[in-house]
Each structure stands twice: as C-alpha cells, then as structure tokens.
Image 1 (tube, one colour):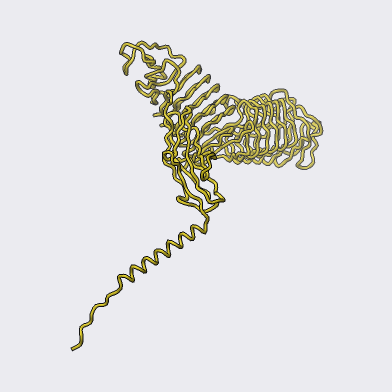
Image 2: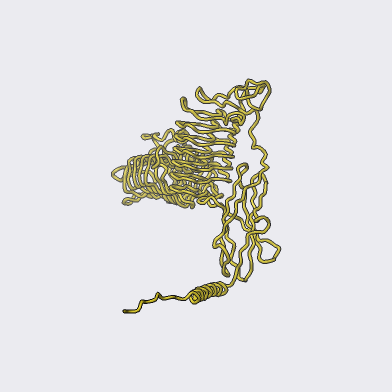
Length: 557
C-alpha cells in the first residue's frame, strides 16, 4: 500500500547544502550569514522581515519565531531542515514555495505552532524516523504532495490544524499518533493510514477530526457495532462484527480500511475518488455486498486476507479494479467490472473463486471478448444462456469460468420480509408511566430489510402512533420503546417492515394485535393482596375440614 506515498515523497532525502541561499543556525548559536534578518537572543531566534532561502537548523533547544513573516523559496529544497535535532520549535511563520516546507528527520521533540505552510511543490511537512513531534494550530494549504506526512515516527501529536486544498491531507505510515480537532477538507486524498503490522495501525483518532466536515471513525478494538451514517472516513482495526452500510465515502487514501478485523459487513457503500476504495489487510471472514467503488487507483485491495466474500458490487474506472496480494479462498462473483485499466490482478499460485458455478454465473467484465452460443456446465450444449462460452482469464491459476454476457443485476424480489412474533418487557399488565421495550426478529434474504416500524394505539382510539425500530447489532433484533401512559388504558401494537425492493410485511397477531393493559399501581397491590388473602382462607378452610385425628393409647394393666 506504500506506492502512493512513495510517489508523493520520493525525494525526502533531498539536500541543498552549500547553495548560495542557504542560511544556517549553527551549533554555536550564530546565524550564517550574519546579514540574515534574524534576531538572536539566547535560545530565541526572531524573524525581523521576510526571508528568501533555506534554513538549516544545527542547534538544539531553540525557539524560532517567524514573527508573522515569510520564509520563501524557489521550488527546490527544504524551507526548514531539522536533521538530528532535539527540542526545536518553529512558530508564527508562513513557509512557502519550497520542494518541502519543513523536513524533520531523525529528530525528537519538534514543535510546529501557528504556522502557515503553503504552496510547496511536494510536501508541506515531512516527519521521518522521529519521535515526539507536536503540530498545533497550523494551516496547510495548496501543497503539491502531502500536507502532513508521518513516516516511521512515534509519539506524534496532531491537533487543531486546518488542512485544505492539498494533493493529500494527513498521511500516516508505520507511525503512532494522537489526533484531535483537525479539520481536513478539499484535498484530493484527505486522510490515510498505512503500515505493515498491527502496531502501525493503533493510533488515537477520535471523531473531533473531520474530513469534508464529516467525522472520522477510526475504531480500534471494537465489536458488535455499526458505523454511524455521517462518516467521512472509516477504519476498523483489530475489531469484529462491525457493520458499515448506507454511506458515501470520497476523497481519502483508503475509503474503508480494515486491518486485523473479522466478520465485517460492508453493504450499500458508495466510494468515489479514493486512492484505494476498500482495503482488507490481514482481515478474514468478511462480507462486501452491493457496493460501488469508482475512479481511484484500486477499487478493492485484499492483502494477507482470506475467506472474504465480495458480491453484487460495481467496480468502475479504476487503475486496478481488484488487486489480491497473498490472499486466498476469497469468493468474488456477481460483480460488475467496468472500464478498469486492469480489471483484476492476483498473485501467481494463489487461488480464489471468481464465479458461483453454473447456472448462477460469475462476474461481468466489460472487456470480455467471448461469445454466447452454447449453454450447460461445460458450455457444450447448443443454445445461449447469457453466460460466455469461454472463461475470463485473470492469470494462469485464476479464472471466471462463467463470465456474464450482460451486467449483473439482482433478480426481482417479490418476497416480503419475515417478521417473527415480537416479545416485550415487562410482560403482562404494567403500572402507570411504565415504558415497555419491544423486540422482534425481522429478516429478508433477497433485497434485505430497509426499515421496521412499530405502530401502537390506546384503548378504542382508531389512530396509530408510529415508532421506528432500530437494529441492535449485538442481539440481531430490532427494538423500540413504547412510552409509559399516564391514564388507565389498553395498548395495542403491530409491526410493519419494508425491504429494499419495496415489499411490505405486517405482524399484527392475525388482526388481534398485541395487547397489554395499563392499570393503577394500587390496583395491582390490591389484586395481589386479594390473591394472598384468598389463598390463606382456602388453605385454612381445608385444614379445618380435614382436622387432626390422634392415635389411641392402650390402657395400663
């Protein structure tokens, strides 16, 4: 997955030492050349006017105050070069028109505060093989590479930054970081994370960070949850049984990133203009269905991931439609591969399944050149069957045996959802103002459940009040709460469900509805007291009627 970042940052070892426009803050604290408009007092260096040239920092434990001035280059070199430095702060400076604005290499405790890093030809800020960097309240705009790139660095803190209109926003490679309150928007690729082992993906990114004004959901060690529908970026790390559905994700390095995760459901997700649409890295037993991934470098990437299912999806206008690296036993069928430069790539000697057998068929490939004159499992029976007569080759070890002649579309769904008998707690009659929780199992094997609604009415009132039922990923049931009632009455309810094809089902107990009564609390107490007293009276009466007969005692002789 490193290709994109390597392309953007291919010259991070660039050096321009010795250029006539080079400025040095030397180990002894002096500034060379001395005519440079930088005031030096103790460990503080203050710009007195705008400066043209490269600044090589060769001293530790200093504070460089840009004093709202500019450091400007001519499209080459580093604006600030911090190599093998410790405890250096750069603040209040506009850094523009270099190859890279700020280059931090093999350094520690570097602070960037309230700077504007803009219009550099490649990256705004590079932090490479460094520790403890802190970036706060900076603006990164119009940089030709990454606004911020962290590579092989630890204990980074990125907070309160505005990252706008760059080629790439924030990219993190094999690094650790804490990110808070960053606004990332308008970049070709807003946000991305890459790595080679689990620790590289354990970073702290909360929802105070946004991409295009939508929160980042970067979940680590989660289970039995669903990603909210307002997501702008989704990562699921070392987690299980997570659902991602009914959202659109655009303009990120990875639209959905799954690492060391299992039992994910990714359904009805649209992904546009991401470098990678969906990435599975060492993630197995997951399901992708009914998704669109379009116009990126790679629509779907599986790396070190097996036993995944990818079906009913559109993969369109990417450099690679599907890419499989060190991954086997994945099932890929009933997808439409349309106009990708390379429709599918997989490693040699790795076997995956590219069709659902005959007559269900495989995938639609827009560049398939075969014909449909025959039918049957061996395509040797005269007569067409909408399946190509020859397989679609992917490599020597993989092929779609039954390529479709027309784009795949779901069969018409005429089956309504199945609603099982609901249950509610507390059961039976309830006191005044007692809420009642109703749960029910609703399923649909074709187009899937779209929504479930509970409708209830009071007493003999003919109008119904509707409540949406939400899906609980832990129980697999739909649930809602009927509010408590303030007056004595009966409550009747029914449940209605729709699937995505528009089919409706209703469960109303065969027209009798599901009913419980609301009665005053004193009535319940009185009823309970009456039952207890009645029971005691009955027991006493029975014992009295039976009596107790003592055995006779023989007379003494």
